[in-house]
Image (tube, rainbow, N blue to C red; front, top):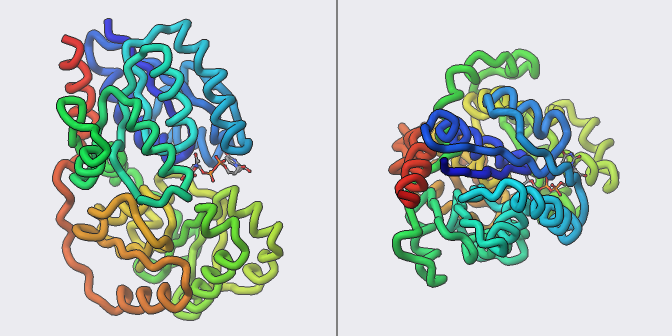
Length: 365
Ligand code: UD1
């Protein structure tokens, strides 16, 4: 019996771990265990996703909660080590690039447990992003690296990570998107927000470089206010951004503008529907750049770099940084340009999790 311990901790991990858990759950000879680190814990940042994505209840919740990077990472490590010692898994699977990813990979690696990293090799080449540090370090200690796009394989090669442990398998987050499209179509989120298909912009913001700095947050708001004169701007607000908006005294400015429609963080299905029917999506998220590429919706990424270059070369993504003039110019261009049909990147076909599980099982024969 192959014992596989899967780790998830923060919102973007849930759509990645879901298809892996589904495939492991129906594979003979495998015993999956799910550990939730508790990095994200609000109902709308966590439990809602488990229900909507049919993720089994975690076998263990480490309940670490929020803290500084060092304290959060250390707490995950302290609480994860005894779990590994007790369950002695053959593999630990970590996904993405959050603090829980590196924390659990490091614990397993030091205990001599094999680590598989899903979404390996992505690089923004910007070490001021906490996720970039997490990616580089996790890849350096992983025994199996599952990559979503060709740039990831090249990045790993450049760092001396190559050979049979690197596998281009596609994108597990797109597995989840394709599986959920029909259910998402049924969401009534547009009616609830009083917006029309194709007649609004959808925004998400949570990167420290955009929302921890009042100058940057203010510049983005200026752009959103201009877009708001053209069409409503729907903005589901991440807890980090919500906290900063009040601390920076931005609430009044936002509330006075009827075009800015702020909501609580949305569940997966509502958010998928909101993105699918938007005229344009503005974001600083990593995953949303990939989801909009598959949905064929124009995406303006309010960052200066992306670790997902395929979304630019083959998808609908475009980098604007957080300068209002650049954001507005790009917005006008995509608003006025007819949409082209989408050609999904190779292997972004809904079967990435199957490939991952087959490779892991093959490696243990
Ligand atoms: C984390 C990830 C980031 C990912 C993002 C997705 C790291 C380094 N960052 O950033 O890569 O893109 O998740 O959302 O791992 N909070 C709540 N409720 C929650 C969770 C957080 O209120 O359920 C608040 C807390 O005040 C917390 C803050 O949000 O301090 C930030 O949470 P944290 O997990 O530290 O980082 P994120 O910004 O969410």
